[in-house]
Length: 416
Length: 166
Image (cartoon, rainbow over all chains, first blue to last red; front, side, top):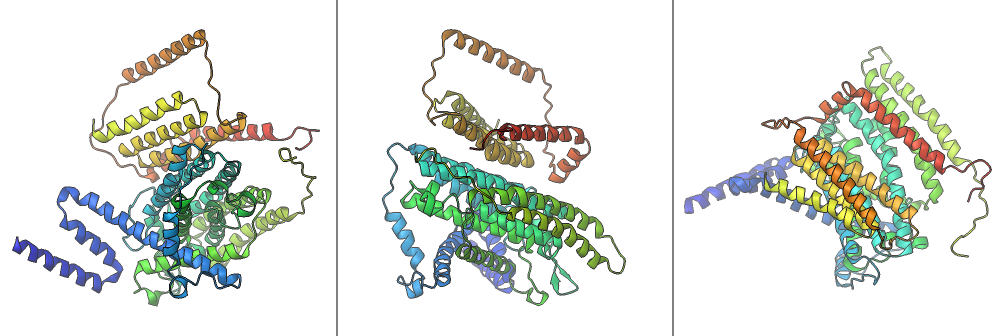
């Protein structure tokens, strides 16, 4: 027994020194060590549980951090201090929020469908957490490496729509149902540009696996410029389309029509209180982080460093730095842009983004085949053609969106 | 038969049974979604990753939403009153169900089921290649059919000439 223990201590020390020597792979080495302690038949389950625990703790922490960042950031942008009472500079505000949510009364409306009302936030959080499982967070650090990881992401994301519908319908409340209907219409419409934009990256790499998409973005052009997809014409346009779709998909401002506090008193969240409400909130933020993570993976080079001489910084640091930058971008946009009207929302998706993403797919194919060009001005020529192919249709599509609309006098069928 | 197979088939069967036995149509549609998830689990259990995820994406994510929308748009109230079925309706129902079941059982028993020992891992790339070469024609025909359905829906929904917009 004593020998076994000393052997174990020796290996633990070895692992620790290995982790310190190579911080880039520290989580992988640590996980391998913990798994190796358990007997053979338990190792798969233990490995899965370690990944799940790491994901939930990291993203739970990020959720808390993000709520604070959002409230502080919104405060600064609106020229007020934001939360500043709990702890130094208000940094303990998320703790206070969490305790408040836990101790609040959980109200279920009398005529609500109690079971569905209960299960909706659970499904929503579960599906949002599932989407996190396929994103590569660092070198060798994708919790599950699937051959069709992108498909998994969108399949799990599609289930959140059903959960939002459940929440709206089960509440037995007009506002909830209206909000849920809006949410579904919006999410289905914006799923198309989102998918089409990500398919441009899939098309070039020839794989649905997120790990190989990240691997294809490693290395540098001319020794300085990273080979990220966003630095190509199709990637740039695809990234913008993807981000617009991501804003709509996570129901964030300027696409927060489903929740629209001022007109729908928070849509499908109206009849939720206490911890169920907190779960909805958590699902929204985790969904936002997950889709930002996918954007980082597809277009911003995943865990690759932006400059060659910073390659020694651990890969996961780069991933989370990019993720938090995108999250700040979400907060910034929320503070600065007003909400769209429902018809503008649909027109933007169907009349502008979808045609544009189809053209972008064409440009991606052109980029793929013109990679073999070898004459002197090949790169500027490729850029020029791709730019023209995207900019000209964009101008027309955007013009047609901007035409002044005349509205007939509205008649209110139910209110009058 | 492994335990996981039994659990998955229970999910599918219970979901399907619930889908036809609830009186509330929304509950039926949701049970159908549960059965679809079960089917996806069965595909995953058999190692068909791509088909499993596509099943969830298409049937749970899109088709069940369409079904729910159809229910909400066609019924005046979300709760349907209990439907009274006359005796001859019941007899025809049982007869039709029995015939369909008989045909299905006959088809299943008549199919020679060869089991492949050892799973072959099929990548998404191979599926794509097959779809674009061997099965290109069926794929195109399905695409055409869906486009026609979409255009039909647009024509149905568009205001007719002279009709005032609401």
